[in-house]
Length: 307
Image 1 (cartoon, helix red, strand yellow):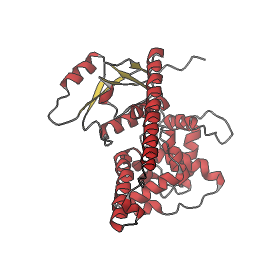
Image 2 (cartoon, helix red, strand yellow):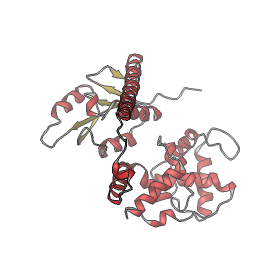
Image 3 (cartoon, one colour):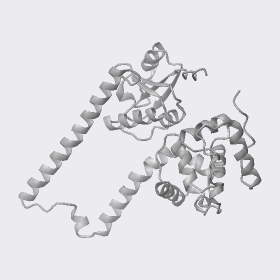
Image 4 (cartoon, helix red, strand yellow):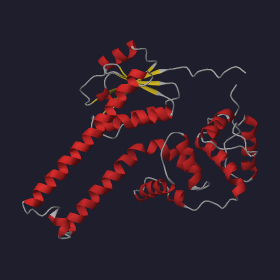
């Protein structure tokens, strides 16, 4: 049996500038010279978490692709953010390369440099923690009472400000990332249980639990950014229908998937076939989708198998 062909490697560039006055021309020239087949451009502060273009790029990148930047600071806010992005790429089978830094995760030397960066990030966190603890000990030794006076005295205005600040720290990243997960939630809820939605999202390289996802959707509903219907209880289904609803959920989450694409995702999620096998084929997927339609589930028009 002939081995499966190795996925074709695409070089995908990402260029970012901090202000509208800056130009990405220099970055574009370097990325094109490196062989990037497509380049995504974004304007935004290096410290900002709101990177809509980057979030969409990371969502669409495929196994074998290489995300290319001119310098590390064009991509990441910090070493920990860089490592987080690279970890997400690795989960999808993609790689990362920085043209002006010794980072190329498709090579042993690049992986070594990445490990050094990880060690530096851990050292930085340890030093910050150590300095913080030393400062607190010194303050206590001088007789200083630690903490916010307003919190200690339960001042309503202080409590309100802290509550608002805490809410923003949670809500802002949530809104910035919503385009990665909310479309799937809208397509699947409330027809499908939260467990199925989480499984589909995590099958695409995300990291959710049922409780975290429910909390996120509740928060967007409270902000009037999502339909309250999403929080309704899903209809009861027998344990024998779990696989059927999961396959239907994958098809609903991305109607453009072919039968073979759905089969590949089921294998990646380590879902076994009705007969207990580990390999899915297009006909098995079609059987589950046909069952879902007969059960009254809203399933896209039968996908065509990949040629």
